[in-house]
Length: 229
Ligand code: ADP
Ligand code: ADP
Image (cartoon, rainbow, N blue to C red; front, side):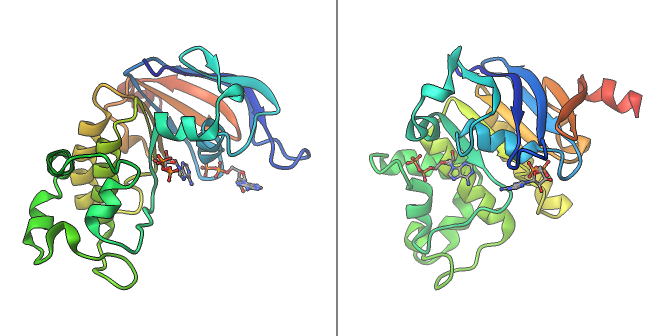
């Protein structure tokens, strides 16, 4: 379960300036679809609509065939895991940050999530382990470590749908490749919408849609789109 479908979605923050101008696509359950396009194309706006931070002026967004216009925001947050570009951690412990929203998770679940996100060795190298404070008054994590904490949180939460919004864009290319491996792991079997501005980061997507000025202007797999460039 977890298919996502946009049907002729039109949206403007300001009526005189349309941002999405008739966007239609489907992410079949368990598949990965990437939206690529230049900055300002409307990519992040798509993910905000999926969480109902804003409502489309025309068209519909469906999850498993159900129009999300009638779905509560907290249900959407439970169903959709999000890994943003810059993860902001709570000024609390690493364990708190991973466990956030899944307070019932066992110690074993927590360790398994950390292992899957490949942050387990790092955590165990710290004198206080999971109890190490992070953020403003604690340990400053690198961009890659923060993304791993976000990935571990997502694994623990176990949502059927995943949105990766420029999740590796802020990282250097070496760290980006490492984080990509962890993201591939968490997206396996989940319906995944990847938002990126470079084709090179979405090689494994089942379908890539190119968004430009609020319209899908091209679609295909990675090799097809590269051949057209
Ligand atoms: P992308 O993610 O592709 O860079 P965005 O969806 O963030 O694009 O933005 C698309 C357009 O919408 C941009 O021109 C941006 O300035 C505008 N925009 C984004 N957020 C807002 C907002 N809250 N209010 C008004 N305009 C916005
Ligand atoms: P819970 O899952 O317990 O309801 P939150 O209400 O903090 O926890 O929501 C966390 C989830 O909400 C994230 O994983 C993501 O799915 C979504 N979310 C929160 N903030 C944003 C945001 N700025 N942009 C997109 N999604 C967000």
